[in-house]
Amino acid sequence: MDRDDASAIATGVSGLDYILRGGYARNRSHLIEGKPGSGKTTLGLQFLIEGAKKGETCLYITLSESKRELLSVAGRHGWDLKGVQILELVPPELSFDPAQLQTLIHSSELELGETVQSAMAEIGRVRPDRVVFDSLSEIRLLSQGSLRYRRQVLALKSFFMLNNVTVLMLDDLTAEQDDLNLHSISHGVIRMEQLSPVYGGERRRLRVIKMRGVQIRGGFHDFVIRPGGVIAYPRLVAAEHEVAEHDTPAMSNNRIDTLLGGGLARGTSTMLMGPSGVGKSTIACTYCYAALERGERVLVLLFDETKRIFLARAAGLGMHLEPFAEDGTLMLECVNPAELSPGELSSRIQAAVEESNVRIVVIDSLTGYLNAMSEEQHLVLQMHEILTYLNQKAVATILLLANHGLFGQTAAPVDMTYLCDSIMLLRFFENAGQLRRAISVVKKRVGPHEETIREFKIGGNGVAVGEPLEQFRGILMGSPEFEGKPTDLLRDKALCSRRSRPSRYRRSKA
Image (tube, rainbow, N blue to C red):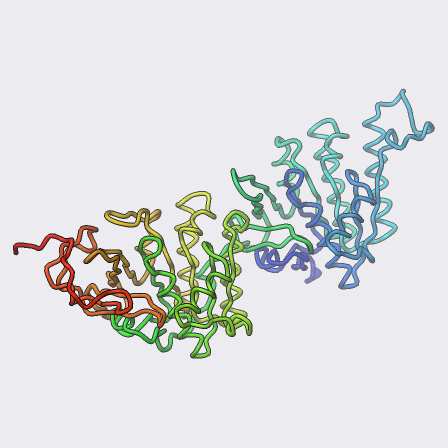
């Protein structure tokens, strides 16, 4: 028995070999099914181009598209089909040749026999290693019956195997009732889907329904079609990745570390929760800046602002990040939720960690990430895998989540607090006619943390953290009551006079 028989061969599609645990099975027939526009032809061309690069003989048999159309598709992707032979089969009655027209014999009987015989003859002449048969829908229509269609496909499969050919048979799902027939015949089955959300670009995903003798990576995997071909983004499974060693904690070089008991532990996730504008991005930026000064690489995923605004805001706080962004130490990526699929996002994070050795990842914000997901349940499951993976890789992760509302009672758009190892809560409060900010750590799984509520201020020199707000109560509930003196709070000499101002809050009689 040939040991190479049914061994894995490369698909030519980035990410698909990982999903198939090596690639397609050699000398076997595979069914690629999907509705028109899902990317079957592009996937087939990449398979043949990969074989041509390795010196294999490749043949594209087309019944639905012309050779001119295939060359046009290849040209738009920047491909050279040199080494890929194209056999264009045109039914006799569509050739506009009067000699080919007949009326005594049923056209389907003549066309089907001639079509199959022409394909077999070309394969016998070329002796290809790889073949793409596009498409089975034409064979189905010519067969005019389920039984005859199955027999024709079985005959083609047997012929391909006898000639040691690895085949991709494309089907555009024009007849759903024949799916099980094709599935039972094929060695492997891949379904490609195109989804149209209410807003934004189309989403594409694929699923390996069957691959005999292989423990495939199941489930749906996102993919895109861009200049250069199909790119698949395997679903992230944290359990398949090794655990890295944890080292010293990530520090921010200010008193925020005191609240956290010494900084952010490596391999943990921290969520910054609070209303819009309270300072979540600024606090996350302080940790990024401190890490960059230590020589670490940082990845920041921006959902809610542009790179220019992010860098300008950091520079206004005394953190000049432009040099780090220019040399690649700071990886700033603006994410458009309407265009980016969740699978592509997780693949970007994984590539940054494994290829660029990123030590801190910031997602700004989860609210924008939520908009990229169709359902809240999928967001939680996806984020669970991402956080578990980053924790295993000893990466410090900072997540930002904006609450609904600015003052009073606020609510988070999604409850993900149980996924995070630490939670830092930021709130607005008012005193003496001024808007102030409070910060506290309400959860930390690894090590001790301070249980006080402190005031913090954002200025030209960054973040300043004050003493515990012992004179207030009810800050976290959204209805603070002031029991002390206004002079106990952080004062901005540039804006406030030294004279005490009467508090707008009711003094407690207690």
